Length: 476
Image 1 (cartoon, rainbow, N blue to C red):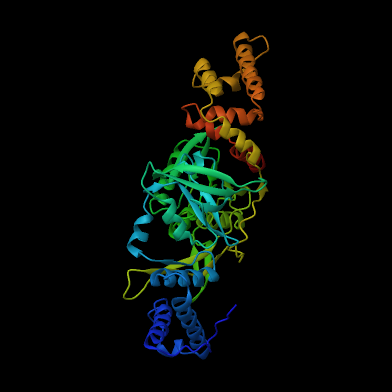
Image 2 (image 1 turned 180 degrees about the vertical axis):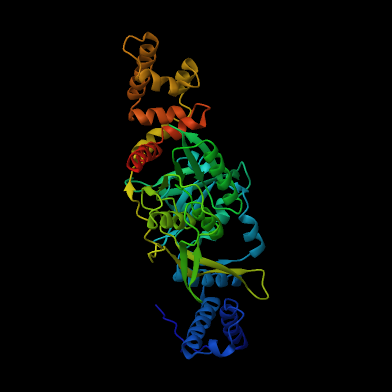
């Protein structure tokens, strides 16, 4: 076997000089406009540029295939940025990147990121294609359309996953406690993600679900809190589960709704001077507060939860959050339609905790449905036996069941409903579908038209409602 080295007779031809210039151009396109030429003439930098040009030269002269210059350059840039951190990325088309962050597009409806060098699902948005196909937070996407994601950037993966509504894409996922990879084919759809959902549930408890921190989110939350004050709610549950984050300004505004003006929400440290972000506005109604988080809560969600926890304003419940608390800034590159997104700082909680890669630990850990229970729940989607049970007993069957469970034993109507519900459980068990009482009722809630049913039979929301009653007792 012949080993080719730099001493193999290669001369500094015009073509080689071109590759050296190409290498310098490659680096210079990524440097911020403020850098001077003196700063890029360091000996080590020049040595690295010479090494890169040498590799490029050998690739073009000796590789058995004719390489595409643009692909090589893009690959080199992506490799360089991937080495920095999971969130820095090269953006080939800045205009296209800007249009991606709108509330409506054709895709799968999930937020993805790089974790431990693997493409990972942060949040599958409820009632969107990925969630409906059974994709879960924490799933590792190992392949897209049969192609390994090992060297893909988040931007590359998003490009492949998005597409025309009605078309399909196949992904291979690796899931904790599953012995084999799971193949999933998902049909793309127009993704609509409401920023805020609100309701009054249980025994007069205000519920706010924030799906993303958008520009309009603070106003939506303010409106919800005004309604809660008018209804004299006993407390508020702020649900940040499966919320991948969003705008920092939105997070600060929402934390300000619950904190005293001037209290520190978060601060950043990195390139440039540290920056504090205090709570602003006027002091609001002091509702007893529970914040729900889980492994799908990231970034802005962690900022809000961390501030509320450390100031003792409310109780944080659920599971440990994702751990993504860094600041990215997009730099448009000169003489190019491209841009580069770089991590420039990290966020810290008021007590100085760097939550990046660590997450927020809840005050009270509460479990949702286990992964096996979630798999059972998927089997019950649009299940005929559940539909028949709802049709026979009415859309308010869950409210009727609650009444029947507390009715006297001689109440024949309640007894008939209890026996009918038991027959449903037995029939499902024959199909190897075994769930807790709350699990069966949650599956029924997916079929009824009353959205409140789903909230009131979610195990973590049930735990939060019970905890609010405890807080109320201590307050009194």
